[in-house]
Image (cartoon, rainbow, N blue to C red; front, side, top):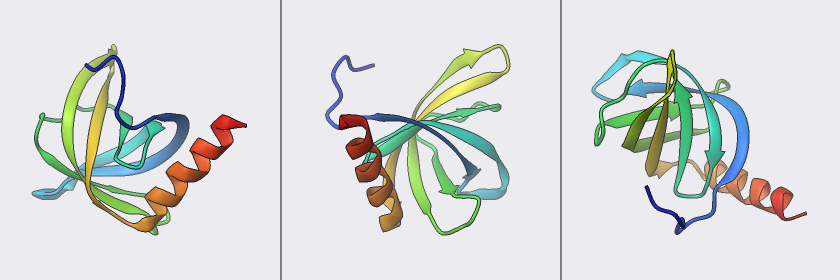
Length: 106
């Protein structure tokens, strides 16, 4: 893991649906732990394979992204911390990360 990030992360919590791009029926509700304009870290119940491609969708369906799994580490006895690097996303992700960064600076 990097000590200093290229893109600042903003701690935040909200739910997203994460699913395997190659098998959309394989998915779960995940909790976002932090977000930047280039990726997110989510807490999941299942393990996700590094370098696999996943989809993310907000519960309302308005915000979505396709991402690459950078890492998947045990986070708790029943969960994993998954680092995701966005490949494509709706503009809402950029707006969200800008709003959260502004909120954090205040």
